[in-house]
Length: 236
Image (cartoon, rainbow, N blue to C red; front, side, top):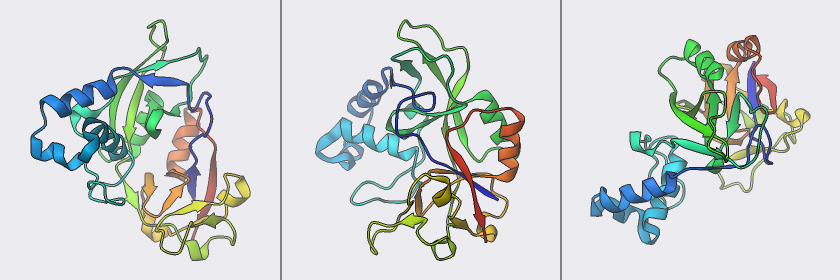
């Protein structure tokens, strides 16, 4: 079966109150001092700020796709990964997966290892230093994760009536009606389209944001990982 994970909407262990250290400044410096003028022009009047906004969206959207009038999304360059994340308050524990600002994802070593056992080379991870306001290192290694697999497996017509919503007929994206279990569990996915995938994002279903297989769920459970709210859904 398919599992769907919805990212949190409020601060806590799965979305700590925090900020990147030097990330925007580093990207803006690259824009101003290393990027060619013809590349800079792609980001319009917002210049460096437009480039920063585009970079963080590249972590979430499929390379080559376009939303609105923006530049096509592309693979994340090595210099575009965040390096440090500073917590604004004390957290005794953080989730094995937690959301950072701009909806980027951080995962611990056990999460990363579980994914790489089942899908080596499919997803990308880079170490990120998590520190307290006093500059002390949080006692666990975390990685920024880029999910490298996008599927078109959501079946709106075979989902339970009322389990999803769509802003308009023209809009390409669907959303779960609510993160309550009765709505999440009503979403249906094509078994043949999944075809052995273990971790992915959906092309036409924006929420929940992350999907994983029974096999990966078993790996998570084996390591007692702490994850945001997730729910089993239907395969058809």
